[in-house]
Structure formats: C-alpha cells, structure tokens
Image (cartoon, rainbow, N blue to C red; front, side, top):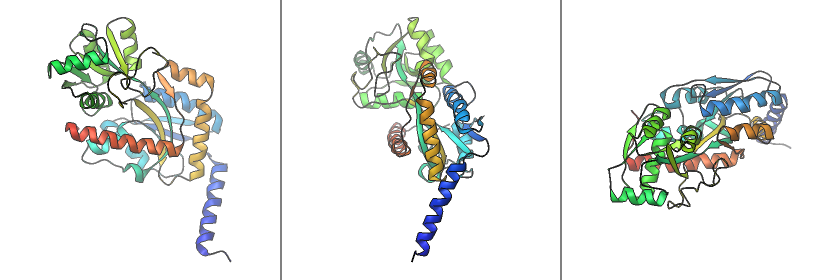
Length: 319
C-alpha cells in the first residue's frame, strides 16, 4: 500500500505536469533591472518577442531600474513562484551580495536558474597613443610605472570596474580607478585621451576601434568573439584563466514548478536556435548560449565565488 509521503510526492509530480501543460495562461512579465535601450534590454526584447509567439502569451518586458539592479531583482525574488514573473539576470545578481551590506535576496534561496541566454564580450582597450600594442606589452608598461596610468569604469562595483580589478590582481599591476556614472561617458573620456585604458563592452567600443581612436588588446571571454575573430583572449595573451564578460540569463523565483522551468528552458533554447534570432544577437555583439538550468546554476555559483574574492581583496564597497 502506498505511503502517505509517496502519495504526496506523486500528487506533486502530477500537479507539476498539469501546470506545465497548461502554462502559460496569461501574459508573462520579464523584469529587466536596467533602463530601456541597453544590451540586457535588447536581449530581453529580441528573445521575448519570439518567445511570446511560441508560448501563445505575451512576454511583457518590464524595465525596473535603480539601486544597482537591486530594485528589479528584489521584485522578482518576492514574486509568486508560478512562472509569470521572471528576471533578466546579469553579473550584479551574483556580485551585489558581496558589494552591498544588505540585498533583498539570497541567490540560492530565492532563484531558480532557467538558462544563460547570451553573453557580450568585454574588450580590454587602450587609447591609441598608449605605447602598448599587446596585453603583454601593457602589463610590462604598468609594472614599470605602478600607479601612473588610469582606467575608467561605469561605476564603483560595476562589471567594467571589477573586470580591471581582476586583471590587475592576476597580472600583478597597479592602475588607478576613475569611476563614471555609466560606461558611455567613460568611453568618451578614453577616446578623448583623459583615460589610458578600460574594459569596455564590444558594442560600445567597436566603432572607435575601427576608426583607430582606440586599440583593442584582447577579449575577456574564454573563446574569441566572432565579431573580432583575430582578437586574442586575455587568457591566451599573458593572463591565463582570465574571464570577465557580461552575461544575460533568465531566472525564476525559487519554488517555480520544475516542469515550468523546463518548459521555459526548452522554448528559450529553441528561440536561440533560430538563425534569424542568432543573427540579430550576433549583430548586437552578443553570443547566444542556452545552457541547461543545472549548468547555469553551477555557472552562477562559480561567478559568485570569483567576484566575491575580487571585491574583498580589492576592498571595493558600493557607494
């Protein structure tokens, strides 16, 4: 005779299967913790539009900005785990718990990873007048003149700040940080020669590189980017093991039925597999990924551990 526990587990499986078959029955809210127009918003809208067609329900992009992504992230963490409120997650999801004294979530407690959708390459770029033509030459220059050269970032604790902090730590160099309120003004000052180097988003830096105003030395991803196939990675250019890129993933509130998470994963991966979607993402400087929930969960844990070490060793604190 079936035990009470076995019956409960069986009923839970049945309910989960029924939920997946009938899901979704109303519009889905995809929270983007950034303003419209940025790379994360672009990913959300490209994928969300096609996802709406596949699911038969509208995927509504909801831009909830503020507090270094904590406002939008907190909304999703506190939402019902039913698959109707999702988050476009980015590196601050795993960085902020170390950067801020308090955050409105605990990563492993409050979120169920769905998939890492796409990553945009970061480029280590220098002003064209800087006498360094490669990563190795830059490292030698910085070691010869500790504290003489500076770099810009989108702000304290931002991805571009931590990427150079990681580079400096791994390369054993000292470089002065100049924070800005956003990546665009930092790139503008780098182009103008008021900064020496920075880790810039490929999409933002690309036109300046092609015009000769900036020099790209390497990409922060593990693999070379299709947009600059001739550009080596930092890992193969003198900083073994280096990786710092901007990724855009989808997570749901923890407790969302497994079958619903699996359905979302299946549909997003199918969307990424469509040549037209992959081409649009690539044109925007993004590399489609589409890993499994388990793989994405392991990646988030590894990213959290990596950036926690960087933040603590560099003594970085959010302002």
